[in-house]
Length: 180
Image 1 (cartoon, rainbow, N blue to C red):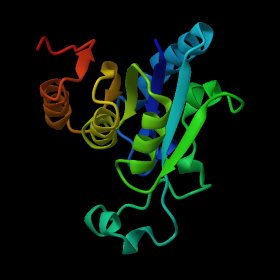
Image 2 (image 1 turned 180 degrees about the vertical axis):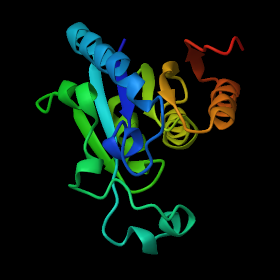
Image 3 (image 1 turned 60 degrees about the vertical axis):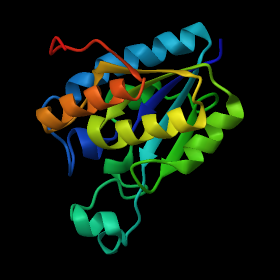
Image 4 (image 1 turned 135 degrees about the vertical axis):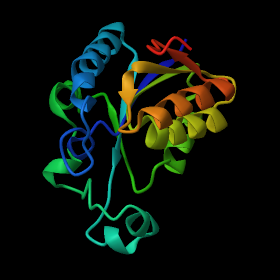
């Protein structure tokens, strides 16, 4: 079985930077441990990086979310903490994406024909959700899993809604704490 752990946008600006929120830092240890386990098992790991340019405020996203963040090569663009340290540049793929979802990610996944993809990272109801949908579209027969203990968002209601929505799209959500 060909497996991939996809770490979505676990970057400084979403943890303790421009769009950081309380609790995001608590995901660092569990995500880093998961990366180590996947590496030890010989399975693939890939990282997405929300990546914007200096003209961010002139983009559609910048007009709707006027908070400059994840500007390429800034400190806020970099992976956070132990998760960033777990990146193995010799074997892991890093995918820079200018918007929530990535069509390039979909093409990359389709070419590799994964049977199983697990997603973790931030923000559950934006980038994790949209890239889970891209993965489902690219590989409709692959099993997709989102680890609720390794994703979050600043709005608890939207976070719960995103987890429920992913389940309706036949994406398995594990480790839910809300009992649903």
